[in-house]
Amino acid sequence: MSKKSSRSKPTPVQRDKTIKLTNIPNQVSSKAKLGNNVKIWNFAYVGPDTEIGDNTKIGSLAHVDYNVRIGKNCKIEGLAYIPPLSRIGDDVFIGPGAVLTNDPYPLSDKMIGVTIEDGALVCARAVIKAGVRVGANSIVAMGSVVTKDVPPNVVVMGNPAKQVYSREEYEVKRRAWNKSL
Image (cartoon, rainbow, N blue to C red; front, top):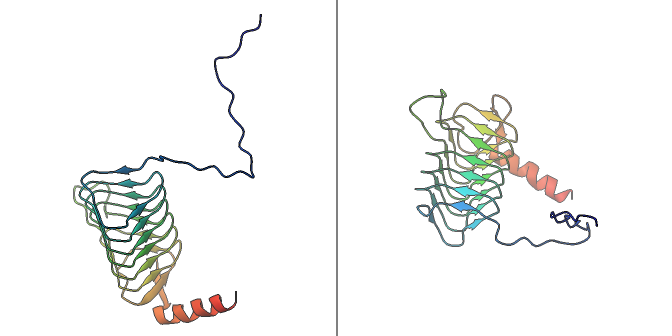
């Protein structure tokens, strides 16, 4: 008589079928304050004493630590890291994998947060040094390393990030790109 394995065989996933996942866990502190219509996607973390404004979306695997303030109508993409003491204004976009920091001299005993003002965009994989202020309506280009304050209404790019043009020039380029599609 042959022995049957007590393990069940995994069921193969067919490529043409959509799998609906339900009850995906998030870790949202009971001490976090969430505004109306806040959406928090799969496997995200929101720490205690954090406030998130109305209509804000937090992407999958994002980590929003304790004592963070995020305004209304923001979009924090997946894998972003928002450390304690961060202050994010209204209508801000934080791209996938972006990292804000809060310790300018690790491992120090004192932390200082990053401030991102209203309407700013921080694109994918950008890194913002502790204590930096990103001005209103400014853009931090993808992959940039920001070590100094960014004035309002500019685009910064590179490592270290430097101003490359104004927000107005960016909008002209963006509109031209959209027309070319």
